[in-house]
Image (cartoon, rainbow, N blue to C red; front, side):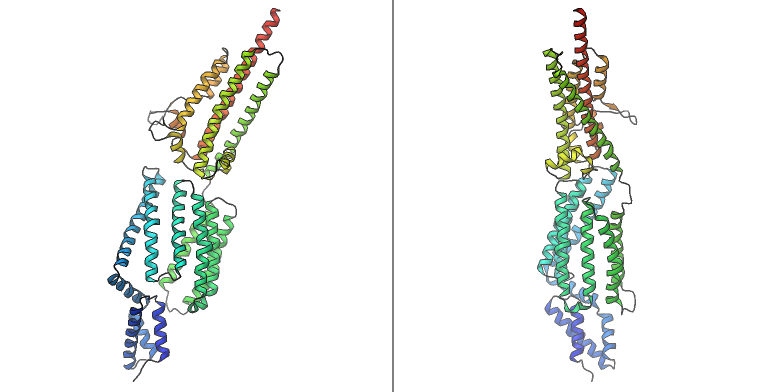
Length: 500
């Protein structure tokens, strides 16, 4: 009569343990059940190997996990509720994110609300409940520390992505915390737990290579999203290491004795393929960076504005220093022209600084530097915060900064024209460069006011350039007014000399 040996029983115990059965009583009962089944087949004349393989066809790892899951559903009400919640919230959140992304691409209203609530459900409800279920089922082995880092880092990363998509301030800090906690804390912690697992001794080299590759990959993702140098090489190195080094070593160790292609191997290959595809698209910059073409014109406008400002300052200094100019009224007018122009230009500069600070989530000092060099602006494509700041919430934009700017430009134009002393060329140029008239759109004949036409749903870099454009025009109007005042003074002096 054939009976199981201690060695045979240990093999069965190891098989059940590898299935991740965490309920101790269920584990013992399954081991006892399999032993009885195998021993019964051995009594029919089969060897242990044949009897065991026959039993495994009926009760494999998947079936054992399913038994535990069904048992948990029956005896653990909290687990049952959590799993049901996870499935429902997961479906809702992914649907909202998908539809929100479509609305975002099409510039349809409601995209922001869908994305915010989708990511909120994903990060605050689905992700924590999924981790809890995974720990309950032991699909993710590790200590409590690993689960805590996974939960906190994952939630921060999810909300960092939301803040980045929505151009909310603080996205850079959240993404940095999320990516670095995953790369520098979670992955090393998982690697250590795997290296301490004696049953996975033959996979240690693969785990080390995979961990190093993933760390480089995640840091490369962070560098790419934040537009830091060195992202491309890290992403490419990660792709090569994951595909040509980790995957062959891991599959050779795990699947070398498999008689057929395993589903796990296919899922692993497809997962690595999509992961590489996403990251390599980031690294290669397949699409043109259209917004980069706005940078040079913006710099040219700023440089021209500085040149005009210097000319105006030189001319005003010349007027005050000229011994022939004794007209106190002229000097007072020059001071007033300079004060009006400087105040309007400073107001525009404040708008630019505030806008950059809000969108990029940087300090005011950093925003001041970026306002002078548009290449330093991070979120060049934002058109929501810029619209809110400049156009406000009213349909006509009357409660935004653009309306205030329009009023200041109109006031400046009216005041400067008064100093032209009948010079039609001067008045005409000032009226043209400081023009803020409403416009008629050709496609539907609808009249759109100046602020909405220039700043409503306009990308960030274009808004900055337009603001710089009006700063330049302020300096053009200022310089033209000063020239008119000087020429008027010179003509007056010549007339006085001729009469004498």
